[in-house]
Amino acid sequence: MFSGGIASGCLHLFPDPHKALLEINRTLQQGAPLVTLTFIWSDRGALKYEWARRRVRDRRRLNVFELAALPELLDKTGFEQFIAEARGGVVLFTVRRR
Image 1 (cartoon, rainbow, N blue to C red):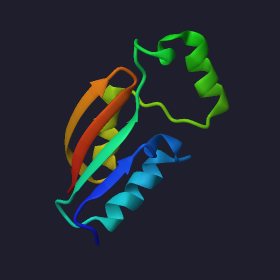
Image 2 (cartoon, rainbow, N blue to C red; image 1 turned 120 degrees about the horizontal axis):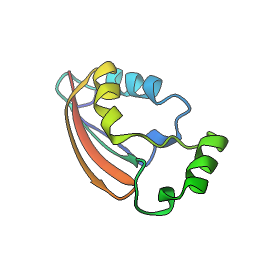
Image 3 (cartoon, one colour; image 1 turned 30 degrees about the vertical axis):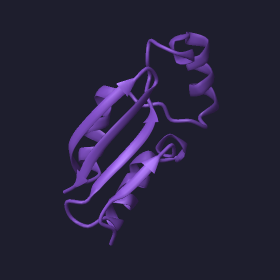
Image 4 (tube, rainbow, N blue to C red; image 1 turned 60 degrees about the vertical axis):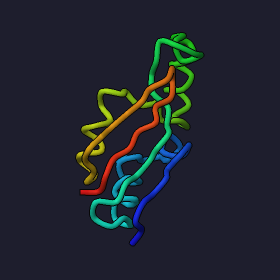
């Protein structure tokens, strides 16, 4: 079991982020922090354009998250204490394993 984790620049690449977070959770000690950097939909940057959003959705090779939906996803995968800082199309967040 690990006392902390970093999933920077990878959560958006997993085919099933829910399953990936469950596995990350399994490897962490209770109360261990996880720091993650990933993509979110934004009105800034390239993803503000509808054609760019369609391209990302159509290719299904990149998960782009709704910032408001992340706390629920993390709760369902065994994490708590969601703290996020969003900058344009990226978000840096921390959580703790329940």
